[in-house]
Image: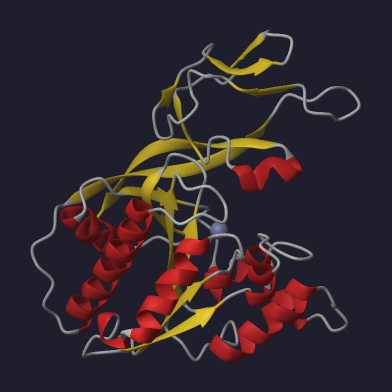
Amino acid sequence: MIKQLAIVGGTHGNEFTGIYLLKKWQANPELIQRNSFVTETLFGNPQAHQENKRYVDNDLNRRFNRDELAQPGLTSVEEVRAKEINELLGPKGDARVDFIIDLHTTTSNMGPTLLLTAKGKFYSQLAAYVKMHMPQLVICCDEDHKTNDEHHFLSSIAPMSVMVEVGPVPQSVIRHDVFEQSERMTSLILDFIELDNTGRLPELPETVDAYRYLECIYLPLTESGERAGMIHRDIQDKDFAAIVPGQPIFVTFAGEEVCYQGEQTVYGSFINEAAYYDNNIAMSLLEKISLNCR
Ligand SMILES: [Zn+2]
């Protein structure tokens, strides 16, 4: 039974949607309250937001590894903030909150995406329920073989969690459609938990289509490590479309096409995500899967 839930926005300081949704909900708390549990909100990285950056020193959403949280003497802005958040919502492993919804946006054309970092009937049913009410929803399983302890995401403080990831929206921009989709998805997640808590779940499909993360691939680089090319126009904005072996995925600045070398059809996500430019990640590759709701 989920009794205490936290919605986190602004884990990345330049993802404005979640930050402004929090402001809306703080002004209208009834929108996120349900009868069977208590909802609170938390602004993840206000300092990065003040500086209009994703993060100040390093990515807050990679700082929640249990070993790192326990390590004394870490002093970066995000290392310190991670420990504060772990005290506010956690501690990880014995957390005060039962469930975290962490709000993110992407510059990639992913539409409304529900990111799951754990498996099980609860999550499959949750995904199926949200998709039933929001047919354009995409469900992505991200390293759901890992235990919560092994995850480094903020949401892994709580024993159960999801991430809401909606795009395309540029960094530091608010778009009406993305704002609405983020709000709607969050509201449906809260509705599902209320129904599950009170044993009133409606009939759900037996299975629901989803994608599972396989690996990320990198932009072409020169021998000295400089960027040598970009995402090919044929896959730009084509998140969740098939990428087949031999298909051009990059083009060098000299105009040479670089083709996908894998042996199986895969699907891309976070294609040309602006936040991944600092480490030359071009996209994530996914496989299609089906989640069992029974
Ligand atoms: Zn984010």
